[in-house]
Image 1 (tube, one colour):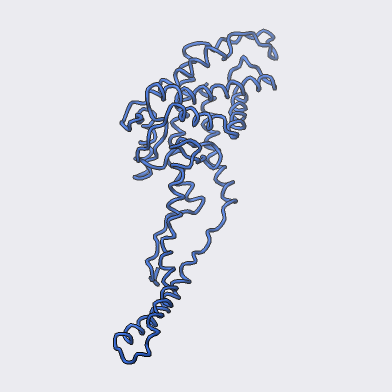
Image 2 (cartoon, rainbow, N blue to C red; image 1 turned 90 degrees about the vertical axis):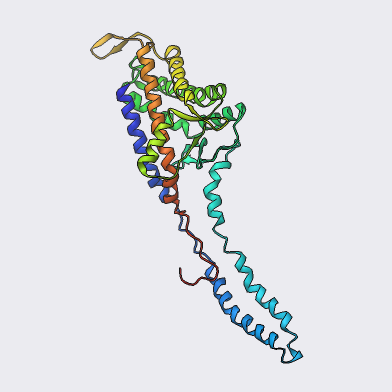
Length: 327
């Protein structure tokens, strides 16, 4: 299992390196802002307005009745003055992952535009608690997402290459058994952590991104989320959902469908004995693997929004002051 964990870790790192490169090709250059055009007309329209003002105050002749119509000509160029708050869509785009999910209080984000990341929020502000039904629905949407099926296939291939679960043997039959085991392990662990235990203990299964501070501070924060979480009321709590949920999932999978002792026919040994995996050390190893992968996932969740903004070139730029001609 140790070798299998290393290979899974390596696959996560490869995914981190490859997917952004594939997504960069799909990015389009941001459109040039159209605000400078109205500002020029605004500057050119201001002098006539300034000239009409003293003429009306002088009161030289009653023929200056067109003075009331002068504000009408000045209002048209000043209308773009209400448009400078155009950067608001960027702020909305930055905030959309907080409320745009299919379940209230979740996101519609994906790690590297692929893996579901629906329970991650790019905020520290406490949101209304999720109901039991919302927790299970959010877990189901992420667990049975279409991307998960090829991802389980990759993990099953790694397990077969490292001869994980040797009682399954090799070949397509062995690969099929490993695929089913990998999928079942993921499904049970997700529902136990973010569904069952989060509901029973009234803990918030969402990850609240810190989003500020030094790299080491944010890394320490993300790692600490394995042991620290929020209650539904917003108070800090020990993350019983993660620790006990992952342990319970490891025990269920190990003692139910993981292979028992068997004899396997291999080249040079037609009756090779394979020990049973239904043991407590294997439960501890599976639990450690799941918690370790969850720790890596939390770190990716913490820094992924920064990577996404760099890839999509959506840096929040300061809005130019109305009528400013310098920056």
